[in-house]
Image 1 (cartoon, helix red, strand yellow):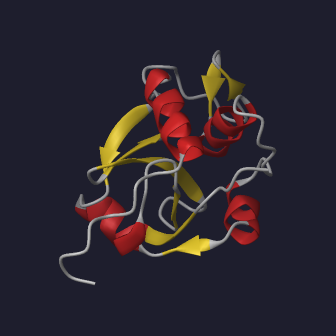
Image 2 (cartoon, one colour; image 1 turned 180 degrees about the horizontal axis):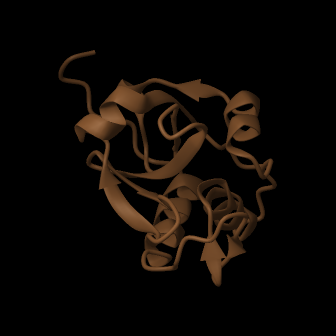
Amino acid sequence: MPGMPEPSPSALGSRAAAKARSLVGVPYRYGGQDPQGFDCSGLVWYVFKSLAVDLPRQAGLQRDRLPAVSLANLQPGDLLFFATPADHVGIYLGGGEFVHAPRTGKSVSIAHLDSPFFELGFAGAARVTPP
């Protein structure tokens, strides 16, 4: 509703966002799931595993098994899914920013959800809830 304050992020979501932010700069590595290198879903899997939450390892399965959340209700720690590139995932930080592991030759970085590339490829969001 207009004028309503945004809900405060969950403790899990805030910790996940902080952990993801701490991994900015780690190189992309296809199939990577540790601080030696990450692919997009490996980054998500690692962040939540470090917080004692067991998620599927693949972005498509992460999307399919978690409850959807609307863009209007995003909170830090929510997962953002993209169809371009196929089955891409990142962790929302707040303020329209998210952390992701983009592609070979790049590093874990912060991107903006309102960039045309990500706006066009956006495929939904989901919330991870505590076990």
